[in-house]
Length: 60
Image (tube, rainbow, N blue to C red; front, side, top):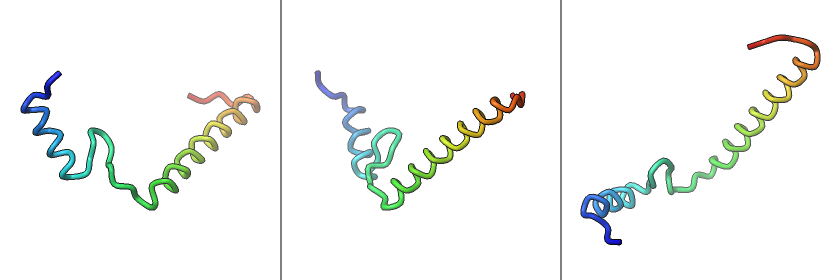
C-alpha cells in the first residue's frame, strides 16, 4: 500500500516537530513523575469514594 502525498506530508511535518498524532515524542524528565502523581490521585479518589459508600454517604 503506497502512502499518499497528503500522508507523506503529514508524516514529514509530525517528524519535524517531534510529535506523533496525540502525543509528544520527546521524553520529558518530569513526565514519569507527573504520570505517577495522576495515578496516585485517581487511586486516592477511588479509595475515598469506596470509604464514603461504606459509611452510607450517598453522592452523585
